[in-house]
Length: 368
Ligand SMILES: Nc1ncnc2c1ncn2[C@@H]1O[C@H](COP(=O)(O)OP(=O)(O)OP(=O)(O)O)[C@@H](O)[C@H]1O
Image 1 (tube, rainbow, N blue to C red):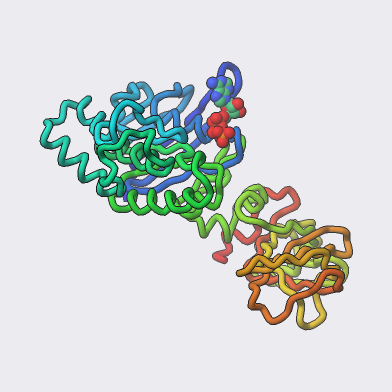
Image 2: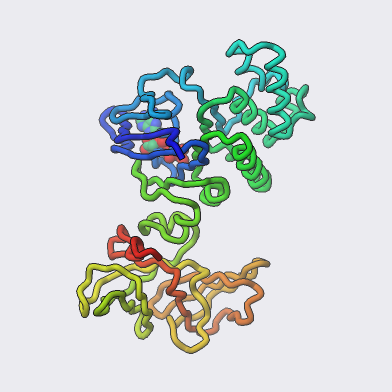
């Protein structure tokens, strides 16, 4: 697939402060690509650089191999959707969507054809003559989306487009956005700090922290094989458990957790020599902890049991004083009541093991 947008050693500074140091990224044609990270990590700054609203202090930004650093925003052929809709209150739905076509001097008949086609695509054709104040938030956001796409932009940029909507509508709209994007096939860069939303809509996600990309991957890659502990804890829920790793002659390792629990991890690639012990940190998702059936595992006591319908969450206080969370399917035969002492087994096939700094994933590069 060809590259639609490339960032080569891109730098953003505000005065003397560097907020994005030498960032490299390729976004493919037709891809739904999301920038995800905590508040202040530089997502909006990067998106505004693509739009041309922010200057670029170093490196090259290219669309289809054409360097865009100094191209004015109006000449970049992009569509944008923001959190606050930004549709014109004095124009009807159709007039809002037609606006960009009028600006581009598209012939009247062609305008009408494209507007009605777009209203149909985003499913607001029945409201075409309404004024924005008589539309719900979700409907207004559909107008904003239609207006952004109708001009056939090369790139669609969306900055937290769903933040103003209530929880149920957010889910409906993210599904709508994803299916419209797929139908139209437009290269999309999406900014959010909501990890579930990012997982639901994206082909690939870049996780950012302090202006630096921590990992780029599919939602599944990022959840199952986080590059570092920051990503592991940012995406989904996880329990971070300290352990000791011992390399085994001939490859692989044994991990010692707690006082008397040992996991065999045949695929770990650590730098420890056989016999040498290394401090490591385990990222164990709540679904990777189970009540032990053979008496082996981490010893602890259940301090909370929350039934949530599909799942039941158990909070267990381990003997070392750490609290961990387990998510069980509510159909699981075995659960445990508050106050019960338990042993927890770790499903070691899928967990991630990091070095003591949390920067290096010892499972990565092992093909697992
Ligand atoms: N005009 C500006 N002048 C100086 N610093 C700025 C300016 N705009 C943003 N910043 C700083 O740049 C950093 C990145 O901000 P940015 O708005 O890109 O973050 P974000 O990831 O989009 O956050 P949020 O999710 O809160 O919108 C922050 O530290 C912010 O304070």
